[in-house]
Image 1 (tube, helix red, strand yellow):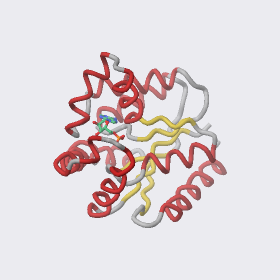
Image 2 (image 1 turned 135 degrees about the vertical axis):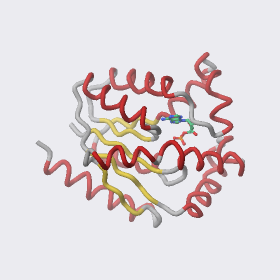
Image 3 (image 1 turned 120 degrees about the vertical axis):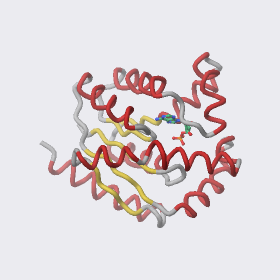
Length: 193
Ligand code: AMP
């Protein structure tokens, strides 16, 4: 059973690639952004609590997303591909704990890299179809990228130390990045004990 994290800045294509890998390798795609948007859509009290933060481009509280991931992991026996989580070092530490609790092992954290200009270009492009308020406003986009730099990037060092991190170039076409990702997952499957 493979358990992976797809890591990267807003706009790099985490959701797209996590979706492709989930389908190809029969993994459950867990996106905390999608879970939070579903809470907002359903009008739940939790959705109401996180709506303003998400619209501003702030990260929501660690406790909120950790609880969502815990619940999702409890509901499945299949391998998972996490997208958009962990986004802080505290979340990464919590994920270690959650995986242990749920009898899982982390196989790999794959970081997809692309230059800032390309991220902004992709977010603008996505805004045309996503309908996401946080994709449509330049200040919000800038703030999300700042949140990434300040709070999320340190997660890279956390996983570097544990030897779980692989970084790939995601600045090109979707197909190229997808091919690189599949090579990594094929390798993991071949060499997993
Ligand atoms: P995403 O769909 O991954 O781009 O996430 C959209 C928004 O949801 C982010 O800008 C945050 O406001 C919130 N969010 C998603 N995942 C997390 C997380 N792991 N920690 C904190 N906030 C999150």
